[in-house]
Image (cartoon, helix red, strand yellow):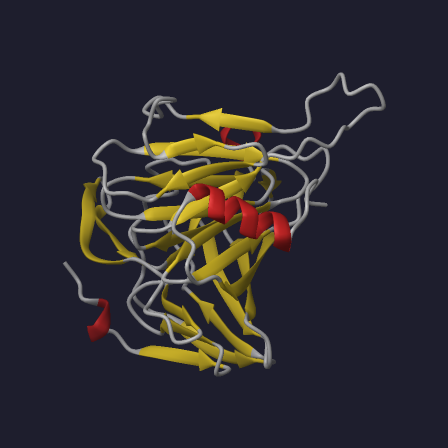
Length: 297
C-alpha cells in the first residue's frame, strides 16, 4: 500500500488552520488541523481493494468521487499526475483526463486569510464524446473517536405543518439499533466509536450542513441545497458513513446530464471552531444550540 508521506505535497496555513494536499499520487487533502490540534483527517495508507481496473487505494483525507456509486465511474484507479496551480487565496489541483470515461477532476482549495474556514470547489468536466448522468461527490474522512451530527429542525414548510420538512435515507447495512446512533430533540448524533458494523445515513434539509467534533475542534461542512433538484441516493445531498476504520462526512451535487464540453461545480464550506471539553451527545447538542439556534436557518 502507498504511503502518502512519500508523495510530494503542499501546505496552506493561516496560523489558525493548516491544510496539506498531495501534489502527486492522488487528488487528496491529507491533513487538516486547527488551533494546534492533531490531524483531524483519517490516515489510511493500508486501506484499498481490488477492482476490475486495478487496486483502488483509499489513502484517507478528503477525496473527490463521482456519483451514483458504480464500479466503472466511482472506483476507477486514479492517475498519479497532478497539475498544481496557485489561485487567489489557495491552489487548484487538476488530474489528467481519464480516457476510460472522458471525465476530468479539479479541486480548488481557498483558505481564508484571517479566519478558521476554507472552501473546497470540486469541478467535474466531461471531455469525452458521450453524455454522463453524474454528480460531484466530496468525501471528508475523519479519524475515529469523535461525534457527528445532522440537525433535525422542527420548522414548518406549510402553514398547517402537514408536510414533511426533511428526509433520512438508509442503506441495507444500516441498523436503527446501532449503539452509535442517537436521536435527540434537535439533532441526529452519531458517535464515531470503533464497531465493525458499517452504518450510513443520507440527509436532505435546506439547512445543508453537518458537523464532526474531535480533538476539541468542531468542523462544520455546509453546502447550498438547490430546491427542486434531483440528488443521488434517494435525494441525499448530505451523507455520513462509519465503519471500524474511519468516519466520513459527505456531500453531493445534484445529478445532471453532463454533456461533452460541460462541467459541474460543487462547493463545500468548512468552518472550524474551538470546542474543548465536550464529551457527551447532550453537550454537543447544547453547544450547537448556542452556536446555531433552531430552526437552523
